[in-house]
Length: 223
Image (tube, rainbow, N blue to C red; front, side, top):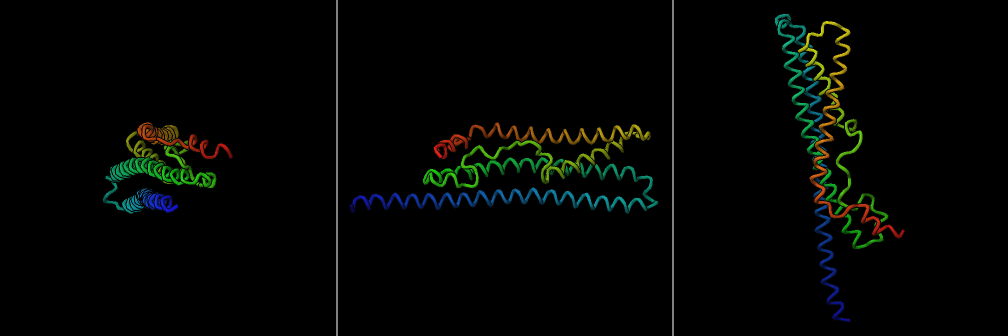
């Protein structure tokens, strides 16, 4: 009995050390994911502040008689600046979205470890305990959260640029060109988002070791 107890105690200590280490890793992953989400929100808020400041500045310049001859150029330069900032914001947020998915998948591996230690908790785990969820590219991503705001600002800015560059003196032509420009800008950005995330999905496919459906079948298939 004493020999069994002596062998069991190191095993329990090793298990506790592993559990503590993985919990620390899990908390670090969650903190990093929250930081990335906050960065995305801060970028969108910054973009909105810049847009609001630009609109206020342009409205003030419109009343300045001395700048009337340059007003068209000022609008074009301001809109181009907003568009470039919006595209940069979109790129950074899409990259952070992909990085967040990787972090969540790493956290799923840690959940799986705890399920392996005690399979009875499998059906009570709130999130997937595998490393292939959540998916990077999901339908209607362009209509969710901050991405939709960025796409809207960029599409409107693109329309203003088109309207400033092209001589749209005819109202009928303007009513055709501007909506088409908006649709083209929105679809192009949506296409970019999906392509980047699909590329990230392909890159990360080789790192997937524990597909959720397989491990769920193993631990919950008999329930």
